[in-house]
Length: 559
View 1 (cartoon, rainbow, N blue to C red):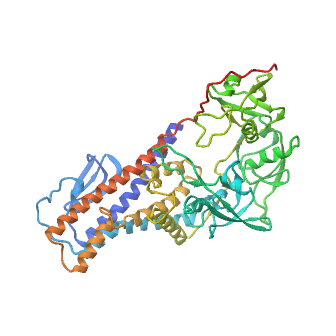
View 2: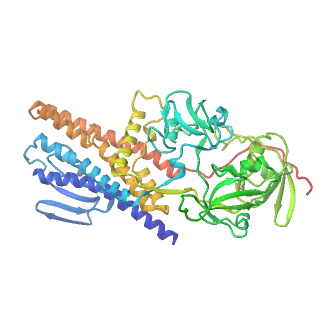
View 3: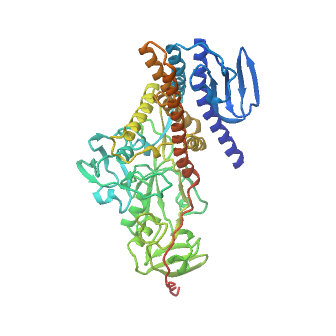
C-alpha cells in the first residue's frame, strides 16, 4: 500500500506540473489563432510522439516525456528551438509588433488567470495554516545561540526587526521573522520585543551555518523558533504517555500552570522543578459556545530516555552503551527528557559522567567522558558522547502542529504571492548586501519536491492549491522579464520595433538572433545551476554521524 501511495502522489505531482506549463502554452496558442499566425504544431509533452494528428494545418501531438508542452510559431524568431520546421526556407508574412506583443503576453496572462482560478478555490475551501506560521511570539531559544546570548526568551513577542513591523513568522514577506533575519544587510539585527508589560530592544548578531562547497550557502539565523503548541499525533501502547491519558489531537497548553510555547517547554519546566509531578493541561474536544476550549489536566510520569543509536568508536561505545538502553539518570539526577540530558553532557567536557541505565531487567552504571567530535558536529561542535536519542515517554507529536483554516480573498493571495517575488528580487539585486543569492532560488526539481511533500500531508490538495497560486504568479511575472528567450524579450523587441516604426534590418536581425541564442544558454545555465542544488537537497543528505579522536577505553563501574 505504501508503494501505491507513493506512485499516486508522484502521478499527482506530474499531472499538476504539466497543467501549469500546458496552460501557459495554451495562452500563446489561442492568441496566435486569434491574430492569424502560422501555427506549425501544438504538443503536450516532449520526445517521440505517442500520438499525433494534423488538423487545419496544425500538427497536434502527445509526446512520451511528461515535461510540459510547446507551441511552434515559425514567425517568431526562436521557432527553430523545437527542431526542424516544415516552413524552413519559406517566406512567411512578417508579424506586426502588436501581434508579437499579444502572442507573447498571452502566456503569462494565462498563467496569471490560472493563479486566479486556484485563488478562488482557496478562498472557498480554505488554506490550512499552522500556528507556528502565523505567530510573532518566540517559542524556543536554542541554547548557546545568538538569541540566547542577546537575552531573548521563550514567550517574547517580536514587534519589529530593524524597524520593520513583524506580522508573521515564516514566509518571504517583508513582515516575516525568518525573512527579516535571513535577508538582513547589517552585521546585527535589532529586535523590538514585548515581554509582559515591558517593551525593550535587543541587538542580536546572526550566524551563518557553514556548508560544503557543493551545498547552498547557509542563511543568517539567530536560533529561535515560533510558538507552536505541541499536538499529539499518537501514543505508544503501554508508554508513560498512554498511561497518563493523552489522546490524538490533544493540544498541550500548560505545564505546572505555566504556558507551553514549544515542546521543549515541558523539559525546561521539569529541569526547574526536579522531583515534582509533571501536570500537563491539554485542550481536548470542540470549542465551546463562548469560544473557549475545554481542558483536561494529565499527570505525566516519563521514565528515562531511550538510546536510538551508538556511533562506533565514540565515548559511549567504549563505555559499553548499546542501542535500546534506557538512560534513567545522569550523575544520580533522574532524566526524562533528551534536552536536559544533552545540556548536562555539554557542560561536562572532559569530565567523567555516570549514566544509570536499564537494559532489559538489569540496571547498571556506566562511566563515560564527553569529548568534542572531530567530524560531524557542525562548524561549532559541542561536547558529546556519540549517541542519538529516542523518546522513551511514548508521546509522538504532529510535526505540523495545530492547523487552522484561513480564507484569504483572491486579491490577498495574489498580492501576497507578488510581494514574495518582489522581496526576492530585492535581495537578489546587485545593491543588496544580504546573504541571499541566486543559489537560494529553486527550479523544477524543488517545485516538484514541494508539491510531493504537500500532497503527502493530510491537508493535501488545499495546500497544493495555495502553493499553485504562488507558482503561477511567479511564472507570469518571471516570464515578463526582458531576458531572451522569455516572453518579456519578445515584448521588448516588439515595442522597440513599434517605437522605431520599422522592422529591424538584416544586420540588426542577426544581432538579435545571437542575443537570443546567448540568452537561451544563459537561462539553461541558470536552470542547471539551481537544479544542481535542488538535487543535492533531495539526494545529498547523509545519515548523521560523529567521529571522535582515538581514546583510552572508559571504565565500567560495578552495577
